[in-house]
Every structure is written in C-alpha cells, then in structure tokens.
Amino acid sequence: MEGRDRNLHEECGVFGIYAPGMDVARVSFFALYALQHRGQESAGIATSDGHLAYLHKGMGLVAQVFNEKNMRPLKGHMAIAHNRYSTTGTTSLRNAQPYLIETLHGPLGVAHNGNLTNASRLRLKLLQRGVGLVSGTDSEVITQMLAFPQNSNSWEERISAFMAEAEGAYSLTILTKDAVFGVRDPWGLRPLVIGNFPSGGWALASESCALSTIGAELVREVEPGEIVRLDANGVTSTQGQPVKEKALCIFEYVYFARPDSILGGQAVHLVRQRLGEELAREAPVDADIVIGVPDSSTPAAIGFANAIGLPFTEGLTKNRYIGRTFIQPDDRLRQMGVALKFNALDANLTGKRVIMVDDSIVRGTTAGPLVRLLRQAGAKEVHVRVSSPPVRYPCFMGVDMATQEELIAHRLDVEGIRKHIGADSLHYLSYEGLIRAVTAGASQPSSYCTACFSGRYPVPLDETWLRQRKSRKESFETVRE
Ligand code: AMP
Image (tube, rainbow, N blue to C red):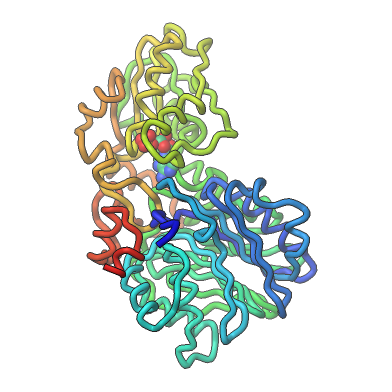
C-alpha cells in the first residue's frame, strides 16, 4: 500500500473541553501547547457546535499547525485535541489525530493516547466486517469500533462495548454531537485528568499542567475503566469496564510527564527529586558538583545534590527550540541531535569532578556524547548517575522505547554501558529505590506498570501483534499476508 505507516506507537497528548461561551478552539490550542512535550509530530483540534463538527490538523508543532486563519472555522462550544508523538521516522498526515468521521449517531471525533496490544486482531475484525481503514494506527481502529451500531442506545454503551474488546493502553477524548467523553483503560496505564473552569465548563487533559495553562482547576483523575461525559448537565460518570490491576506507567514519573503536573495525587517534580535522593543514598561518590541533563533530569539532580550535600549547578545548556533527540530516525542523526541540543558551560566545569544525573538511559545515544562534552569543557572526572533502573524491556503500552535489541541495557551490563559512554563511574537507581521514591508521596496505595524495568507486563500481549511490532511491519501487510 502506498505511503505505508511504520508508526505503530502512539505516545501522545490528548485534550477535551465542554464550555459554552468560550472560544474552545483557542483554549484547545493553548492546552496543546502545554502538552507539546507529549508529541511533536502532528497536532489537531476538532470542534462541534452541536450540529456540525469541524477539524483542522497538520504535521509539526502546535505553533506550526495552527494560525488565526485555520482556527477561525473551528466553531462550537466543545472540542477535542491531540498532539502526536512518533519516533520511527516515517510520518504521515493520515496518522494525525483527532480522527473525525460521520456515523449513524452523528459526528464522532477521537483523540487517543496509548497503544492497544490486540490492535491487529481488532483491525482484522473490522476489515472482515467490510470497514475500510486509511491509516496504520490503532487510533483509527478505535474510532471505527466506536462507530459500529452494536444495537446500542448510547455512546456510553458503544464505548463500553469497545472497552470490553480492547486490550492495552488508551486514554481517549471523544467528541460527539452533544457531549465530550473522557475514557481511561481499565489499567489506567496512561494519565487523564478532569478540570473545571471557575466561570463554568469542563476540560479533560493528559496532564494537569494543561489545565493550569488554560485557567482550569484540577478536579480529579479519570479512574481506570471509567467513562466521563461532559455536557450541559456537567460531568456524568459510568464505569465502562471493571478496574483491572492498576498500572499507571511509572515512566511518566521518571521522564515523560511535565514536572509541574500532578499525577496520581503527586507533584511530578517532587517524585523526581525523591528519585535523586534515593540514588544519592544508593550510589554516593566523592565529587565537586552535581549537574543534571536539562530539562527532564533537573529535579533528580537537585534531589541528589541535596542528599549528598554538594552544590547543584548547571553544566549543560540546552537549546530548548530543538525537538527531543528521540524523534530523529536513526542513530547517526540522533547523535547529531545531541550536539545540536547541548553546549557545556565551561566556566562551571573546568577542573571539577562532576556528577551528571540523567533520568534514564534508553538506547544509550545521549549519555556518551554528553560525557565527552563535559570532558572537553575541562571536567576532571565524570560520574554518571541514572535516576531510574536499566531499561531492559520494550514498552508496548504507549511509550516508544525502541525494540529490545536497541535497548543498551538489554545488550550490555552496567560496566559495559559505563565503558560505552566513557564515564568514570556509572550507577542506576535500584528497582526498590524507584518504587520507594514513587510511592512515598502517593495519597493512596497504588500499583504501577514497571514493564520497561521489570519485564512484567500488566496486559496480555497478542502474539501476532508482538511479531509485527518486532519487525516494525505495519498492520496492513500482516493482515494481507
Ligand atoms: P538514550 O539516548 O536513548 O539513552 O535516551 C535517553 C535520554 O533521552 C535521556 O536523557 C532521557 O531524558 C531521554 N528519554 C528517555 N526516554 C525517552 C523517550 N521515550 N522519548 C524521548 N526521550 C527520552
């Protein structure tokens, strides 16, 4: 098939709003801005005025996709919005969200964050029913499944029916003729929160940082398995499916979420600080200064420095206008990305024994060039401390972390990685340390998905899907084989 989609991963930001009297498209635009870290490949907003639905989406950053002219037609009092993150190279507008289709029940828009682990089976079922699909994403599969009549009387029934069949991660915002819905999978793998505006109106967002940006207050999280409906009557909740073992992605705390977000009742920044403190207790070292890899490691570096009693300072300056290195399609470009992104602050580094705290090592392409940069700037010693355990297992639930072969901790032990990155010493936070730091401030006991560190996957993994994912083939091919 022409223009095959090789992007099987969805690691995105979603938003939804029901707010009569507000310019919901503009509010969505600002919310997407706040969620930009969750996806930089494409952005889109769909709105509805209760009669017609409107959509604009495009490739690139939020600010590249939207302007006054293309936002003007986005009328109405409700909207959903989406930022897409893709890491495998090929990008395509067909994969951009929200999806907006016409159904028997009126317009249907869907924005999805996560990854279905049984997507190929569901895709095949749709194709057998005669439903045509235009993209390679499981998000389109979700949209088509929701559209199916299924002798149902309400969107809640159709959404529950989809949930009964779906396995894996999905945080959804859904736009219909008269309501916006928020849905979270029964494991609660990806985050989704509800907020309200003091002047009236409701919003849904992947992270609470988006609510703060648009002047909404965080009310609560959408619970695992829950469907919330935002409409003229306010918020109505239905349990779409019973809660499975709760499994919020722990990597959201380690790296993915913004530090000013509240996740599981905890400020992400504070959790990261505790990760750094734990790490300092586990792997102290004699040195002069502690630096972080900006920006995601800064809180952990602060925690490390406080716990060890050394000054935290800046050793690397980051160009914030260059996208995450991960979006580069191959290793060579990724390494160039590191050089484009960071400069060393010689004045702080010359003659110093430096502890560099990073939040994670995934493929191992960032740490090595950074260590070299610090040495070139005159650092006498460079000790690397990682505020999470080695990533040895791929994520199938929405965070793209490469295939297992690409994960450096799958191929090498800690000493091998130390040599590879050229550090004087290297220590990772222990698994127990990670759990301690994350649970210490949790308002209620919870469990997390730790699959990338532990190899224990909370959701069943479909064999066909796994094979496809491993070979990075897109579903069209497999279905046609
Ligand atoms: P790597 O170079 O592959 O080892 O990636 C590790 C670096 O990328 C760390 O500095 C992290 O802050 C960052 N990182 C970790 N996971 C991801 C991810 N899923 N997407 C983008 N960046 C990431």
